[in-house]
Length: 159
Length: 287
Ligand SMILES: Cc1cc2nc3c(=O)[nH]c(=O)nc-3n(C[C@H](O)[C@H](O)[C@H](O)COP(=O)(O)OP(=O)(O)OC[C@H]3O[C@@H](n4cnc5c(N)ncnc54)[C@H](O)[C@@H]3O)c2cc1C
Ligand code: FES
Ligand code: FES
Image (tube, rainbow over all chains, first blue to last red; front, side):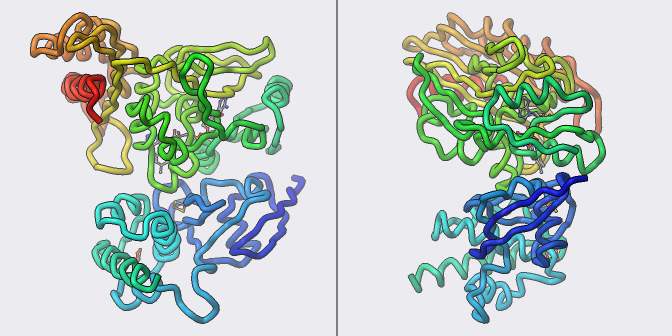
């Protein structure tokens, strides 16, 4: 099977890789680029653990072929912190204990960061709908929602 | 699997026409990638249409309607003010598809061509009188949306044909449309029944209507008897009863864990009443 050469940008860095035509973007991020933040919870679009942004749009990386990433800008959880300094969302998730096993967390962070870029002041209901495709088996969601609302408030104050 | 990125629909069509094995198009991939992953479909040729100029465009057509490129994602459609103002029912139906992540990729065209009987946007598009533009070995043609699916997973396009865009007609004055579905959960679920209705009013009187049902038969249905129950009236109780009865009579659903035949048939009538009221209010100028 001949490999496809893809040129893309991941978290701001120009990146190239070779992939098989059937490989998903999630496979390539994890197995070829060693970016293991995005997780495979289901592989079929149901859980959101593989959430990344492509040209600023939130998607499930298990439902996109790596070959489709040609010329695109990919954003993953690894790009959220600034060096050693955690993003307010990451800090608030720790403060509110909004994670237990952590498998859903990278996807949720990417998803809510994308929401807050569109709307810095969402209602709780908006956040819950936005995250309807991000499943968490551990927390019962409330702590996640509280962490998001708190982080959003802090980010608005800081702005 | 060969992955193709043609730059024109003519090239896409030629690749599909010349391919010998299993061929699929890749729009948003939210159906086809799931099917590949579960080994339901193993394409020999996968033709990504997203490198074709204009596939992401939403444009006014000459007749005052809208032309929605085959790769426009649900989120992009939802953010477009013009289409939502004219056809809120089509937009709300497409926005019900999947999660935020799925909305980032899923398209009207893929929803239609995947040919699930429960596809949410399809009854809304049928009610709206939408057509698809197709390019193929015998040149371009337009097909009414209700004539595209022929059974679960089956469509009427011939080998080498590819959908280039979805066309919504001009809304015109006094028009309104709406879509509702019944699902056990609020989000992330498949329609047990879906209903789309579009109608026009002159004052309080309904002058034209189209009623479509999803998930109650092997394909989405255009129910002419249900539309006839509305036209000429003012949506009084008698008209709503006749509408519900006609919707129920059109149902030929399956019995499964998500809904029995009796339940689905009953819900079709209930939804038709609710959707007709929303479409009627919108046609009367309500937002
Ligand atoms: C988690 C999840 C939730 C979902 N929820 C819903 C839901 O609530 N309601 C619902 O209706 N659907 C739902 N779906 C199904 C899917 O998202 C929709 O059917 C979507 O609209 C498919 O569009 P796509 O662009 O992703 O299609 P693709 O997967 O790209 O293509 C689907 C089919 O259409 C064909 N096709 C694509 N483009 C063309 C073209 N230009 N010409 C001819 N044929 C073409 C392909 O060959 C393929 O067979 C869900 C899917 C997932 C993964
Ligand atoms: S792994 Fe992609 S949505 Fe579950
Ligand atoms: S913390 Fe375990 S799945 Fe969310």
